[in-house]
Image 1 (cartoon, rainbow over the protein chains, first blue to last red):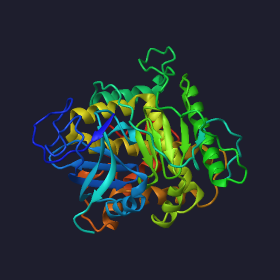
Image 2: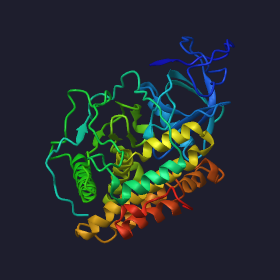
Image 3: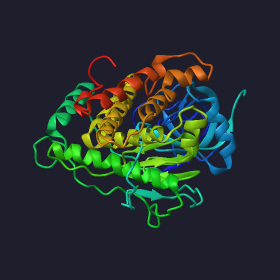
Length: 116
Length: 292
């Protein structure tokens, strides 16, 4: 089950279990669209987004309309994570991505990079 | 390499040309317990003949559970004779899985083959979406490998690792993750990583290097059967090196930071592939004990 990523709404909700998400993303069941800041890393079998302030890693995929932008991001983040803001649908806790090693899936529908 | 051409075995699911649409949702799985010590014991037990759950008292359950993330109705297997890329993947996959079937059988157990999904653009997996931008991966939830053959072009052009055996190494590496899943190693690593996120990268590296070693074990059998050609081993080693974490970091212009590695250095990847290739013995692939 996915929900929209929220930002800037300081309700202090804590989703499910394990470590609380940072405030910018901690809106279980929320519906307001927004960006989550963090570090994105791409490599062989790796598409990982780690929100700032969290040890969680999210398996990151991209909506079809972002194909070119996603490739640019993947190229820029190959091997070394880059700061980025992503917006999209965030799954509940589970086991996602390569080897099920990611705690959530983020399906990105918007990318905001500080610099290219 | 000289692979035997295989008819469709149902192991390859061809979703290319299906529009690249991705459905909603992933497949969260219940979590359990475990640890690095358990992983070491488990791997040793498994590879010393205790693999499988066929009544040997090993404690491993090799039942055939049904995965809700399995391929939807309407997937096609590779059947077009004018599709050499798909045929090649099918041939490699079949060869690799025959090898593991024999290795498991030698231990008195049964190997359950993985399936491989060929896609282009994007598709849905039991572990969330697969997109070509992120390259191949293995999903333990549905026990499937996801591969956009475009990755092989990247392997050649972007990473400088051409050749059919370089591509075969990638397939063998992904199947090795399936072997780890059958042996229970993957689950142990997931559980330990969830309990101790600080150890997640090191555990991931050890898991990936073991997959490289298992890929090498298959390479050994291929060599023994005389299907390798001059230069094949070098192609695999070049591919292993090309996707080493240190090389990717160096080529990105970033700092080489071992703490952030998830797959190991080029040298480590080559070393463990060669360990499997030289010995042909999965028992030599214990990357969870000692230095790597």
